[in-house]
Every structure is written in C-alpha cells, then in structure tokens.
Image (cartoon, rainbow, N blue to C red; front, side, top):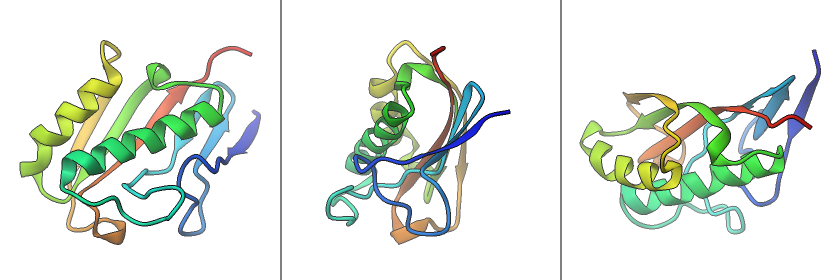
Length: 129
C-alpha cells in the first residue's frame, strides 16, 4: 500500500491537524472543503450558491494536485447547515460534475467550520500513472 499526502496552495490550507487529501494506492480521499478563499483564507460572501461554487473550486484544486479532475470523483458527501439549501447547492454541484454523477450522500448538520453553509468531501479514482 502506498500512501501520500496531497497539498496545494490552490486550495485553502488546512485549519487543523489534517491533510487536504491523502492518496492511497489508486484512491484519493479529500478532507471536507468549505467556502474559504485560498488566498485570503476568509469565507466567500453570499448564501449557499456562491459558497458551493468556492467549495467546488477548492475540491477541483485538490483533485488536480493529485493528478485527477472532478470527472474522476466516484463518491461525495455533502454537509449542509440547512436542508432548505439543497436545491441551490445541487444546481452548482450539477454544473461542476456535468454527466459525471458520483454517488452522493447529503446530510444536514448542526454546524460547520467558520459557520459556512456547505462542506463537501470526496473519494476520487486516480488515473493510472
């Protein structure tokens, strides 16, 4: 089993004792991505729509750092502070994944880091080297 830590400045730095992602053999496991701008490390303004947009950009950057794209994502878990945000999140999510429809779980949670509206983590199949 090979294991490597993935890190990129194109996504927000970890705000705790964790890695942005860890690759194990042919799979990548990302940390949950929230709506932090990777340069300023501040939450992007707006509701769940703009926040999901930033989350997807951050997720794509982590995938790219590992040699993958969003088209390689096989499973996501979406955490929402309020399930009434589902439709707006889903519109942004669908636009980024297009015809690639990973398996997904969506759950409502009591709170998220930095009081964001959405957090998304992913499992990604890494392309053969």
